Length: 115
Length: 115
DNA sequence: TCACTACATCATTATATGATGATATGTTAA
DNA sequence: TTAACATATCATCATATAATGATGTAGTGA
Image (tube, rainbow over all chains, first blue to last red; front, side, top):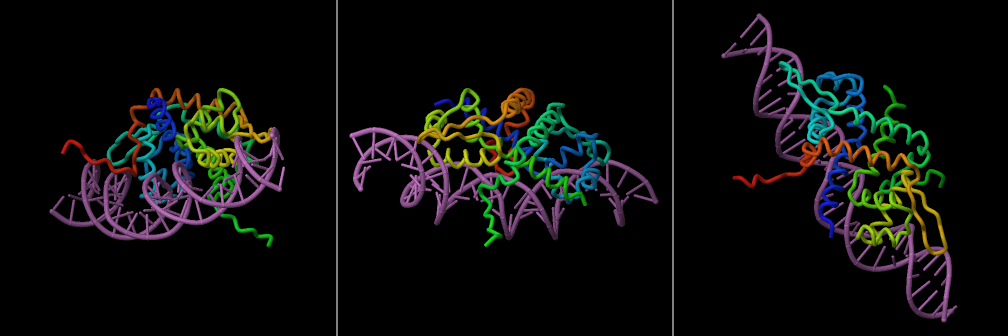
């Protein structure tokens, strides 16, 4: 009965979704140091070029990063300082609640190794 | 070549994953007002009991919420103020980059309505 | 033009995961 | 004990999505 709220939640969920993948996080962390070209990001993260490009598209669509064409290079950078702020707060939060998170595996089956 | 970093990224990704779903966000927003029982959350969010319980398990495992048994009720609350902080920053960020996010649909096919 | 580089965009596949409905567990009251 | 309530768990399904490999596109220099 509150559709405006719903769409807002959907937007926020998508925003966080940008942060909810290790590969994307590694890209964001790399961009946190300084702006980088795609091949630079590939080197920094060890991910494949295709994979990086896909994630960058997502991050760009989500507004977390910005791209600037520069000759045959595309230079990416974080679009806002608050992107880094979120990462920092997450780090702080993690250091306190990590014990609970390290096995946040609702949908992963862990086979009991102590049979 | 940097396994400790990798695991840290995985943890952080899981943390953000707790925020990356509209249903979970609605639960977190509800808990932001005050602590609630499960049935209270069900009413506040309009989600099914089963669904809420599943998401609460995930949020609990992720350390974002805490549960306290109280008779036959289970009372949930946010485990840390920074959980709310992250939501606030996300709101602020959203108000600026919403234009880019509203169509962060890398994997959704949008059929061109203007054929 | 041709070759090379830098990057983006498919198509495909395997897996993750959100939702649902049914069932199980546990608590309280009669 | 029985019934009712509150919550958790399970099986199932449909969808989302991360990764890969191949291909397409564009810029640059020879």
